[in-house]
Image 1: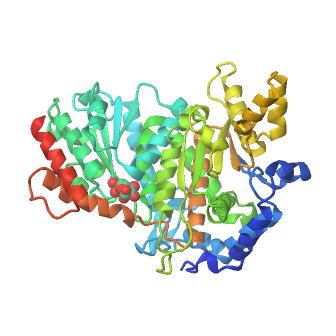
Image 2: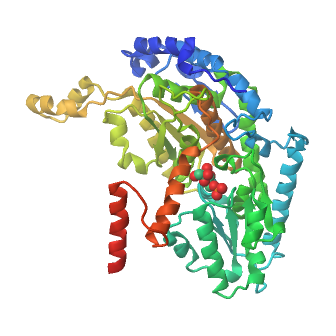
Length: 552
Ligand code: F6P
């Protein structure tokens, strides 16, 4: 059972609130000047990742108190509970065991009397054999041709992770095969994806844990219709449609052969399902061995997370820093800034992972919380983002802690590019921290030959207060293994934050209401049912839609 106390009732929380006042007047610039060993104390390293968290508004005392907070909130017990298969997803009565999906060191792991390690391996074996058949051409389309295009149809956890990983691992893509992703129920998404595809050589993966998600099922049916109206027959469906799901009954009802379904389990949450059979599209994009490397990278961090004391535990430190800013410094958002074109989808993936997990206001004790929980996560790639929203990071009114993700070795040989990219990332962390003082601005303007009056007028606008915190996460190279480690790092950060915020991180009841309302409004828009009782704004929108429908 998880601890259910409010973090505000801990001794450490109160001490942290006091300690924050002590730090209010300090500047990171001076903290570095005063302490030559700061970096040594505030960096951590694993095989694939290097975390520098020295550019944060922290001292030894801060970390000590944050560690106390984690201890008082039972973080160590929570971690043990997750790894041992306790039903810590209490609102759904489930264990949370995505770590078992990538732990290939154990040949047995019992959950409710079932050996899940064996089951995990069995699904992996089936995925491997399926991928081999696709690769060798033994798996043929209905006219005997090899599969060239794969379309993963899924949404949320059945899309964002595999999309992000597939893009991130672009240099590892199997030649002569393209993996596409369709998620949005906006018909434009599937229409544009199918344009130019040949049904004879296209395989659809319908990825849905529940196999009921409206968007996915609408897209799956459209894909099916496209296939049937472009030469395929009902009998051929089994050669072109496979499923990833926990719902065998609905998969078979859709017409997908049971043998072409890759299963997973209720102890794998949707947004934590990337390392389950949901990863099939990744396997088809980069190959089974690369997928295993991704799992190995995740397992490296899982093991670090399970075995490392709180004060040097990388995911825990990241989690605690987020709490420090969100709950004591008033930060409402945090930015993730990958300096890697191929990590384009990382912020979107982390948005679901973090905000669907910890966007909760009901405490585990059944009382509404009276402190901020899940931060608003957002971000974008460097260097593009520097020319877009970085102005606000540097001189805006909000405090926005940033994670800079830097890749040490590129996967191309283009001269100059990578050094410029990395230099920019590092420079931004420095600029955010040191800022630019009035004195520096004045002397710069003087050197440019401005008059004293102009200098007085311009100076205030050119001052950067600095003192803006960031983490730098350096990745050796964007390999499957390193990427796996990065993903697991964030997964566990999110888990620890949920433990401390006293919320249940593994349910998502908040997304249900909109789904239910959409169903009835859809019927009203289609004139299947009378327009029911709604507020005036909703009624007006329904009416406007109908008016414009008639005109078009
Ligand atoms: O948005 C709610 C949600 O349930 C997510 O948690 C999940 O990842 C997504 O929908 C897709 O669900 P499924 O895999 O069951 O189609």
